[in-house]
Image 1 (tube, helix red, strand yellow):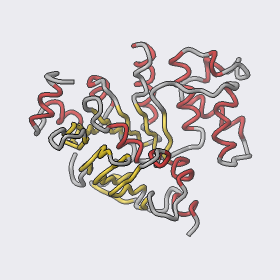
Image 2: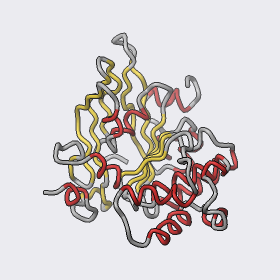
Image 3: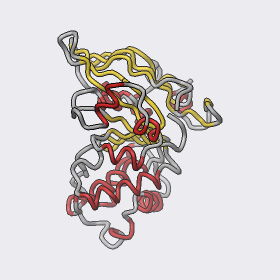
Image 4: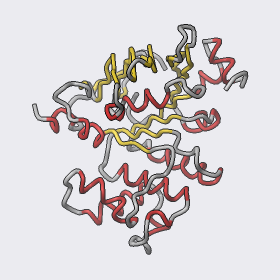
Length: 231
Length: 48
């Protein structure tokens, strides 16, 4: 995944898109029984190396989830939370404002920073979560179906925001929405699920420039999926 | 080397097609217990 680009993961339900995404910042470490075979190199360094602290990984590789999940605290404190967790002590008000501006939320909340984050609309809550994620100035932003709980207008706002954010952050996004992948992603990975061994094991079928993958897919499964022959 | 040094930006950019590769990902297998969740999810170099 290259700097300043958006990579989309698409594919039917249960094909491992979110599982793969969560490997990129060691979120799966929190799941009992998780085992990983392979490598993820962040700027050339193995994030699964035993000397690497997963909390430090998540400081540089932030995540936004499917459901907006602001904490039950003020808008200001929601954004400041990650900074305090990472022991940032200087310039917290300035960093909070910068993150809220970066998430295109500042103008809507600047006069009510003490209000609860839960008082915001769904779309605003998701942008608050994006502000919380970018407050620590990560390098990579992982987004797991960030718009699936939002209405079309809020979805479009988040998509515009992703396009703005890619100037500063490398983004990987899981989406069920093929049009969304086409609108925002530079590269697209199509995953499918193998049921031939009696289980349900996801695998990567094709990874390409988004335009090429949608206009001239190499693999038959990809063709069928983007034609809507299965979902 | 301390964790912070390993992860600090600017230390170790790798390059492909003139662009910085931020994440190089090769997932051979992911298991949750006995459940084989993902295999062969390697984003290949030199594509795209």
